Image 1 (cartoon, rainbow, N blue to C red):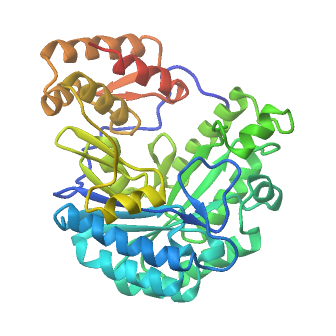
Image 2: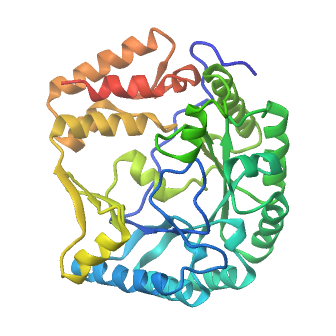
Length: 402
């Protein structure tokens, strides 16, 4: 498959917006990993060898409960997502207590996702998640090739990844999701097709696939700056992204966001809340929240986060109230990342933006349609496959509307 042409779309009909459930969502950031991957710029701390950060994990959980109490003990939540970091790197006792703490906060019929990496997931933790009511497991596979895992600095090897996939399929009742990284040196379409086929055969029903990017300050960025590594050209990366989207659609996992695909009805409802403009609460260092038009971000430092809580105050690093125009631009851009696209009139109503914003958004969308980058399905505008390759620029244009 090539990079696509004007007007290409993987959608064949308009789909109603998914039901996300009432109330907000909860994200919990566990800031520990076995080791720090060379490409990662998320806030996390290396726990070292073994399976636990020890006393640091216990202290983290106690402070997590303090933060929840300072917020007024909110809940229940329509969705809960435990990420990081690597939640399963916590020692068994602390991990079980984390599940016990969060279980009562999930609304009836809610979705509960826990991230895990192969090197820190075992039969006992899978059983604990099953008993607690976790409904989704998100596995950080990233690749099934040894040379790729070594290049990325992952703590697991291909054999371990395959073993954990089989174990999760046998033991877990949840939806199984996996992450893949695209755009690694030497990777071709046939390599990705083989990996995806293996994952789907092992029961994966949701796949997140991200182009490898060089984040400033990371070890991989430093190596690239020194000329020690070189990633594929942008055109080759674009070709791989569209190939994977098309391949997954043909295998019964239509993409529902630029880099996410799932069996219909098995999309991640928690992440949809971000993309479709819902409200959410974040707990833990560096976690973000959005509610009532206000955005808040916690301190991105474990000690600073803990110190604030110890003083009886919320560990806020930054907070802002979003004016209607900014809310409208962000909502439009995030919704355009999805298969459902966006309706300028609905965005205006939800954000309080003026009528003139919706008129300008319609005109801008029509401009992009003339270039084969967007299409209109009934009253909603969506990106074409060609438009997906220019998604950042298109999003910036909507954010700039006044």
